[in-house]
Image (cartoon, rainbow, N blue to C red; front, side):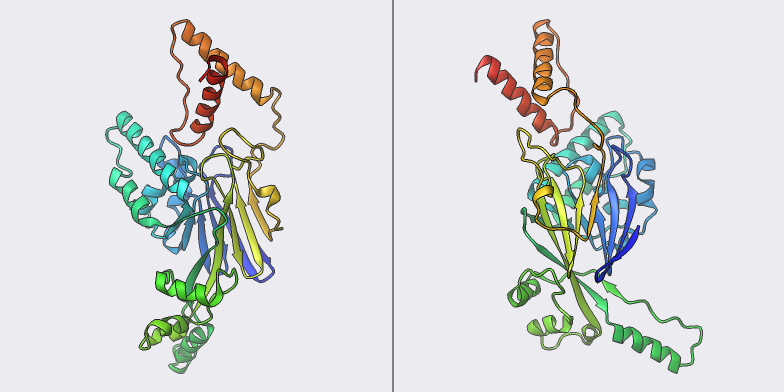
Amino acid sequence: FSVSIMSARIQFYPVHGCNPFEPRCFILKIDEFHLLLDCGWNGKFDEDDIAGLKSIDLSIIDAVLISQPDLLHLGALPYAYAKLGLDAPIFATAAIWRMGQYMLMDAFVAMHQSRADFDLFTHDDIKKVFKSKFKSKLKYSQEYPLIKHIQSEAAVANNAAEAATAGDTTHTPREPHHDKTALTEEEQQILRQRVGNSNTMLLRSSAAVHGANDNNSDASHTNQTAVSLSITPLPAGHMVGGTIWKISKETDTIVYAVDYNVRREKHLNESVLGIMGVRPSLLITDCINVGHQFTVKRKIRENQLYQLCVDTLKNGGNVLIPSDSSGRSLELLYALHAAFSRHHGR
């Protein structure tokens, strides 16, 4: 999928996740930026399920945005960083960072108990990703600028002119060089002091920033410009830390909203998708529940679950409810706790 909207050229490529209950993973290209939207797997950790991810050169990715703390959205992170060459910073809410660790550790232990020869990633790979690859653990509505150095058009034209002067008819002008190296915290602070958390281009020439810190900055920076976009996490519901990503570049806004709730639940409010107050240039969403109607109200279903559990326990049985370790299990536990408290007191 490719579209030009206003001033930005946008390309969207689904790696996998277009079918219901598939791991989520998409690539969003906005002009010079390549964003990986989620990097999911499933509990089977079958390499065939992420064949699309393995076929992509992940070294071009500038940032990874995670929207939920379960395996379907971040399960492939340790494998991608350890085996597939992914080295971009990860952005997520603090809750996703914390709960995602629990989810992956639990899944890894379970996999090792069933497959002792499992070697796609290790415990250390998980720790490394969550310790050093998460660039920033954001709060809801916190705008964060992503800055990237690219070779200026003048430098590209100069390279072409030099090649022509040399009489090299077979030489192809070099493509603009993209430097994924982010500015230091001190440099970003200078940017914020000058222009604030703007969602427009923060800096036209990286030499201006480097010059503020070092009068003897590398001359190569004069041949580069720094372009930017901003990312903002917004509440999505569904799981703790769940995120709708608002991505802004100049006058364009892209909203990435998958696996969000439109109704309030016991432990989380509904998403803000319907009350964002902004009309995005492009909306990326799913339609997994389109046409689906619940014939039984939620309260009735919860009471049925409670009664089934009580009847089973009274008959001397055990109740086992398969669920994840840190995602939807919280809503399930809250519902059961509320039902038992209502019927048996606190």
